[in-house]
Length: 72
Image (tube, rainbow, N blue to C red; front, top):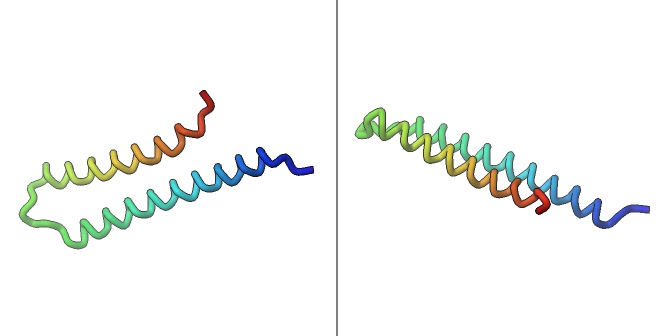
């Protein structure tokens, strides 16, 4: 017999994994597009700030998705 709470947990894990992969892919697409249309008026520090902001935003969203899974 299948435990309904276990199947719900598996769906939840699969959804978290899928959303993490989607966020990483979107972040990679952003990086590729940013480099393809490299803004020449930005200096090196502004470019680094753009990449750090995108990376921290991606990391933060993934962390929130996975932290919600931890039982309190």
